[in-house]
Image (cartoon, rainbow, N blue to C red; front, side, top):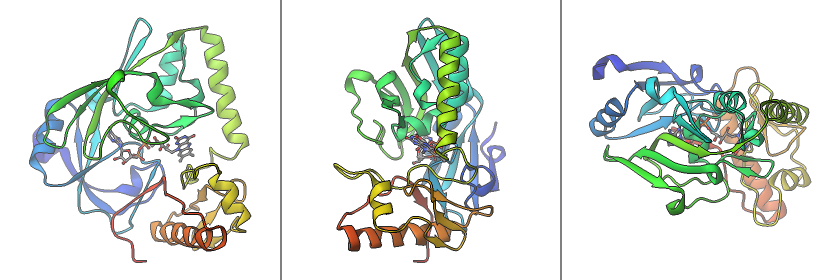
Length: 287
Ligand SMILES: Cc1cc2nc3c(=O)[nH]c(=O)nc-3n(C[C@H](O)[C@H](O)[C@H](O)COP(=O)(O)OP(=O)(O)OC[C@H]3O[C@@H](n4cnc5c(N)ncnc54)[C@H](O)[C@@H]3O)c2cc1C
């Protein structure tokens, strides 16, 4: 597809899981060649996965937004390996794993991520980190060149994957273990049920807002600071889990930003703890 045809002016709230964000130029790329061309031709860009960890300004963003489509949405199974494109949703990877009797990723069931976003953030749940299951990743660097990393040369840590900002994951290869399809499906279902029970599957609820500080739990610290239920416009601290924001039926990014800033200030003042955001805020915010 030629460059003009792949770019559309879109309201980002319509293509993000957290339903925030004004207008931006969105380039949908379907092949490595298109992705390289796009990266080489623009001065600034951001890659958007499923939009489950970004709150985007109501005024939109000035950078070009790149979305992975076409060949980046494919999954292949090769023995005990799953090779997934960067734009594939984690839930589709899990479905394929259950069909192919491949175990290892079930604890991540229910995380509303794309493979690219999950690897970039080193998504984790119930003791399982996605990057720990990688054999190799392929990506495009900020100059539009194709590169790869093997697991031995990857460094990642709590909620920080091996890629630097500007690098775009195109493909991830996971090494899994052979298991029973029924048991894998049951573990996926149970993890999703457990998330629902804890209130993590609600529409317009975020994932964890802040990183857990060394030796503590961000949610407990926020709760102990008396901030559960704190509200700013449409955004509120979830009464069920204080490290989660409920964005309301009509999410407003400015409200979420103000609330996040107020929580940080209050926790620093009352508990002397500096909270580091996990959720990214894109664009310009007034406060
Ligand atoms: C209800 C809910 C529950 C959640 N539970 C968890 C949980 O249990 N554990 C957990 O770790 N997280 C959780 N999250 C947070 C979120 O799902 C993860 O951070 C996820 O990894 C983000 O993936 P995404 O595709 O939505 O990325 P996006 O939100 O679209 O983007 C996040 C970051 O990844 C970058 N990115 C996206 N695609 C690529 C790519 N192809 N290459 C390079 N960079 C890329 C973006 O530029 C951005 O910097 C939860 C979120 C929600 C809403």
